Amino acid sequence: MPDHRVVNREEWRAEREALLAEEKELTRRNDELTKKRQELPWTKVERDYSFETKDGTKSLADLFDGRSQLMIYHFMFGPTYETGCPVCSSIADSLTGQVAHLGARDTTLICSSRGPLEKLLAFRDRMGWEFDWVSAETDFHRDLGRYSTEEELKPFLESGNIPATVTQNAEMVGTDAAGYVAEGPGLSVFTLSDGDVYGTYTTTARGLEGPAMSYYALLDRTPKGRNESPDEPLWVRYHDEY
Image 1 (cartoon, rainbow, N blue to C red):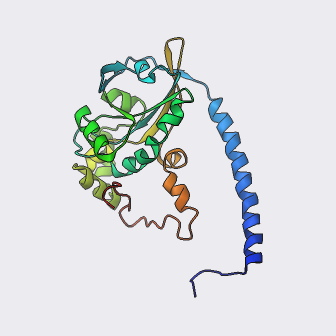
Image 2: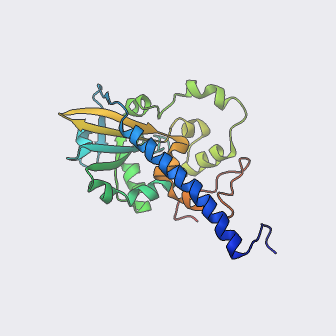
Image 3: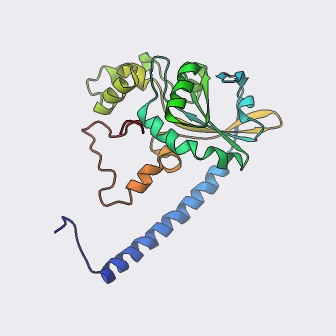
C-alpha cells in the first residue's frame, strides 16, 4: 500500500474541487498583485552604464533593441567563474524559450553578468540558449543590488555556517564561496520613454520562482513536491549533466 491517504474517486473529486476553489482565489489575488506591479511608480536611471555585447559596447538604452520594454536577468557569472551558476542556468533554460514571445509584445529579454563576454557567450553556446547576453560594468549590478563586496560579506564568510549548496555551487563554477556569493540573481525591468530609461520593477530570491523557475511550479503539483532538504546540497545541475 502507498504511504499516503487513499480514497475513492468520488471523495477525491470532492477534495479536488475544494482545493480548486482555493486555487482560483489565489489566481484572483495574483491578478490584483499584477495590477499593482504595473501601477508602481517609475524611477529614472540617471547613470550612463556601458555593456560589452557581441556587437560592441552599448548603453542601457541600446539594449532595448528598438522596443520600449527591457527585462534583464542578472545571471550569476562573476569574473572568476569558469561556468555559470547552476541555479541561474536552470532559470536560463526557462527564459530562452520566452524571448520570441516577449519580443512580439514590445519586450526585449536579455541576461547580464560581470564575467568576461567571451566566457558568457561560450557557455551560452554550450547550453544552447538563444537570448542575448551582455557583460556589464560592476556598478550596474551593484546599483541594482546584485553584487556585494567581500567586506560586506565578511560576517557571512567568517560565520562558519556556509550552506552546503554554496560550497557545492562554488566548486561547480570554479570559484570559492566568496566569489560565488558576491554575485546575486535577480530580474530587473526597465522602460524607455522619450529617450529616457526608467526602472519599473525588480525581484530576486523566491520572487524568481513564478516568472523564471517553471520546474518548481510543476514539482509543486506532484506528490513528492520539491523534495529538498536544507541540510543537503541543492539537486539542480546543468541540463547536460543530469
